[in-house]
Image 1 (cartoon, one colour):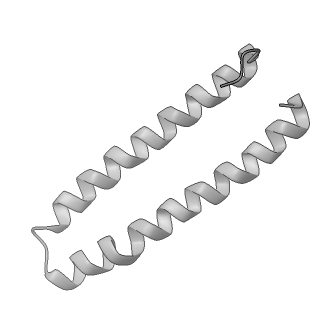
Image 2 (cartoon, rainbow, N blue to C red; image 1 turned 45 degrees about the horizontal axis):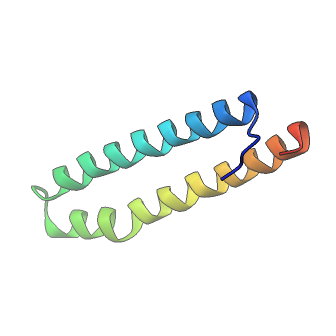
Image 3 (cartoon, rainbow, N blue to C red; image 1 turned 180 degrees about the vertical axis):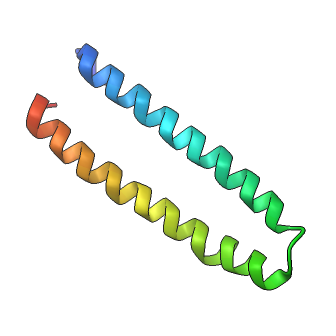
Length: 74
């Protein structure tokens, strides 16, 4: 969407995509694993912990993004 994206911004967004992809894959694996555990553990992970982790990564990403924009102006 940005026609004049800088190399630094491109590298940042690419790395961010890798982080989210790895997290999503690991979360998927843990979610599959919890199918074979007691339903209370399944419900705890899939109903709370996974959402908490998504929110935590989003908050960290947002803080990093603010600092990135301050440093590089994009």
